[in-house]
Length: 82
Length: 404
Image 1: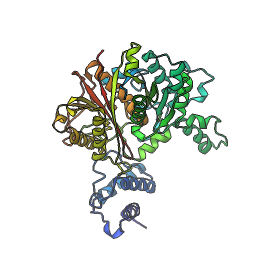
Image 2: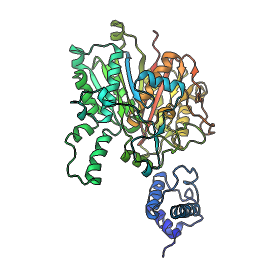
Image 3: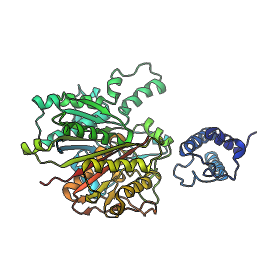
Image 4: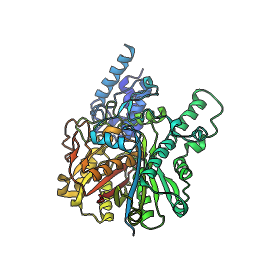
């Protein structure tokens, strides 16, 4: 079964057009040069995939790492099932 | 070319049902942004807005006419009536035959669209109310304003997202100064606080869940508003001849397109429009005392607008006042420029600059004088009103005080 990390990297690759191999947990969205429109598409796809909401007002989200994004997704999934 | 003055103004906004209450709210920095009413908030992430409250359409319109009017048309009519009344102009004869009507809107009759589609998709009804098309069309407000006053000159809607109102006023200004029309009734209207529209904005992730704080370090987005502003424009000499007291002179308009990004702002595009407005007005930058900023409170807009102002004004940028009244009435999209023109008229007439309300802490990237929290008494000779839309469509108006 695909992990959350696999799914997130898959989504980022699909929405940004980047090669999967270029994306790792340690990369920041800023380093990957994700444009702001791609960013909102990625957030939308993640929210749809995991049936969660991600905070809209986190100023670090757009520049943070893939790992921190995954951590946030895990928090939201946990909050939902709690 | 004729000099053009504004002799009548009308407004309805979250701050109040008319010009005086809207200006008072801006001047006092009293925020009308609050929890939205009449919407399924449990399904929404963003639950605040600058909503027009206590508006009872049946007090303004005949029951036979009301089914024809979407909420954005209602707002336009209310504001237009106030503007015409204040102008003291009798709209009849040759004047009515040639007077222009230009009403901007960003998205038109959204209430009608939302209600109709809800029936169709959610309630599985097979019919949509029969007046949906003439209610929802973005030019509906213009049409109803022409009918209300019997105005038969050039009439159309204008749309450029968040700059729509300024573009409408710029076009009306040109028509009057070129002598193409003897007067124009122009402005903008928006009623965008519907479930569908708010959800669309929510998805774009540019909305603040807790307030609009333009130019502040802790700003994190815009807050939607609604309402309308309408203005009666006529040649200065005609106004003088009939003994009217102009509210301000419209002296220039500057327009540009970024030709860049569909959402990200451009410093150069904004600066080009500001510089063009000054050039059109023949106004030296040093004479501008106040700029009503676009100031949406998004992370992207405010530093870009700050840089654009610096680029055009150079050292004078540190001597002029800049404020965003969106902090108190929200971003009314296609009506934004029209509602914000109320702030400019007030500043010019009363020598009182409305503050950027709810100002918390300065952002190093936004380093102008934003008139935080308290209105400032200072005589203003000339002022600008900025509107920079999504899609890179920019329009800046330049106005001057008229001595009474």
